[in-house]
Image (cartoon, rainbow, N blue to C red; front, side, top):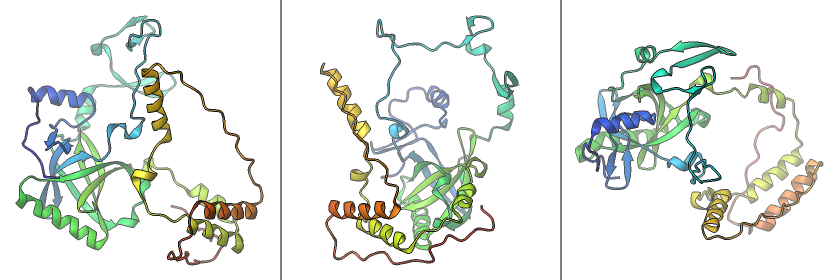
Length: 329
C-alpha cells in the first residue's frame, strides 16, 4: 500500500452524482480513492487515539463476490431471453406505483403497519459528516469472539510519510501488547461498532454485531454439561488431530469446488457442449460405535498423510468430564 491518493477518483465528472449513486447502494457518500490501482477506499477519515489523530482510509478486505458465487445471474424471459423487470405493484389498486407513492412501514402484526417517513429516520440519523473512528478502549485480542465480527476492512495509511508515523505507532503497540481497540464511527449515516487489530504490518477493522443480535450458546453448554467421554476415546481423538496438523495455506485450503464447477459449466455452455450430470456417490452408512469410528479415522488419517517424525504430539490436558457451569454467558 502506498497511501491515499488525491481527493478525486479517476473518471469522476460529477462528485454529487457519484455520492447519490453510492447512497443508493447503501455505501458512504465519500468518493473512492484509487491507490495506484492496488486498493480503493470508500471512506476516509481518522482514528482518534488519545490526543493523536491517525489519518486513514477504509478499504473493503474482501471482494463483492465473497458472500456469494463470483458469478451473478439475471432472470430472463425464457421465450425471448430478455431480462425481467421487477415492478412495484399495489394489489389493492391493481396498478404499478411510483417512487413518490411509496413509504416505509414497520409490521407490528400480520397486515398492520406503522408508517415511518424519511424525515423520521433523518431525525435520528447520525451525522454523516463525522470522519472519526473513536477508540473507546483496548482489550486482549483473544477476549473477543469472532462471532461478533461482521465485515472486514483494511485501514489504509495516509499518503504523506510523516502522517504514517502514528499509524505505525498504533500498529506496533497493539502487536506487541496483544491488544485490540474497540471503537465506533459513522458509515453512510449509520453508527457502526468496530474492532481494530494489527494484521501483519497493517491495521484491519472489523465492523461488529450488537450483543443483542448474537445468539447465546447457553443451551448447548447445558446440553453437554453431563456428557462423559472415556480416556481412550480422547486419546484416539487426539491422535486424529495430531495426524492432521498442517500449515494454513489459504490459496490451497480456502477454495470452492462448487465455484470451479460452476465456471466449467458456464464455459461448456458457452462453447455449446452438452452438460453431464455426475453420478450420485453412495454414502457409507454411519458407524454407531464411537471407538470403532475413532480407530478407523486414525487409520485413514495416517494413510492420507506421511508421518512427521519432527512433529510433537499434542499434550494431554485437564479432566475428561465437562464441569457443570453455574451460569452461561
